[in-house]
Length: 443
Ligand code: PMP
Image (cartoon, rainbow, N blue to C red; front, side):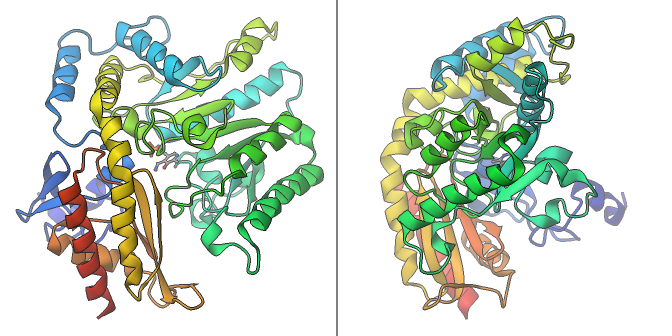
């Protein structure tokens, strides 16, 4: 086949030199924390795919669950029928979710989970006779997906500024980025500033028009932004005051990345009205996502006499039996040792990565659980973002690949979110390779 015609179909835009005739970036196999590429190299999978291969690659027990389910029941309609793995998974999720999040709508990934949550919010407000309460507040730096509405909530303008009219429902608050907070503000004052900004927005738009506030507990693709201590609690309190649904987008933070099945309550002490999840729920072995929905919200919909009381929303592959069987086995594995391991190794992972702050190019290394971001700066004294070379993340990635590590480049950052099964020796390798890779980038 003519490779130049095939390539754009396989990969529509260039990723770190993976387009063209070279085999760079072509991954052939995986095993535990390692992947093997077409050049025959064994690489530590630093970003765990895209924050998702939580139990590691090629786990035999997940492969068994996948195969067993395929040999039992591959598919059944989620509309007219149900299936046992879906029922079992729904129960497991309800047992582990915080507060009264007792219902789950299963989807095919993160974007469809966010889209579902937003449609539910609109439907809920229609049923309550307030169809105009439908604006959605997100934050700069956010990432919520690549479908029309979810993309309109993303922080990066280039995700949506070409979609005429698409952002009519979206409103954005300041990026809760402690590292780049407005000059002169203490952390406490920054928290006040963020809350005040939300209150001012509510005043301006009207509480009767704002339907939801959506937030990643830790902004992941926005640069691993860890909220200040009381930020989420304070934002949730404002939501409750104004009857605004609080949606926690846990597509990255759930299923062990922060050491717990769900992180909202366990790590940040908040009980959202909905939680969206995907990625780690199957450790990337099958595309699956979902929304946990509070019983309060669900019961109100069920009791309603509204003529449209049936939430007309369904995906062909919702509740996919194979995806659900994989998710069940994945959660069992997480709870039979992997979560404990992730919690135990996280401080070592963070401490070791922090040592990279002595490199002149590194402005800050920040992280929580098994996710971390290394932010490069042009000038450490003023912490200016590295603007001379916005490709720095990609250059670090290329050097690190030569040394045996895959890195997720994010403009002036590198992100690390390895499989949760990473051990201390592998953490040491990651840090050593990053040190060499970043040093080479500075040369
Ligand atoms: N929300 C968050 C927080 C994400 O990180 C992502 C994916 N990176 C999504 C939603 C969208 O998920 P998907 O790509 O599975 O549609």
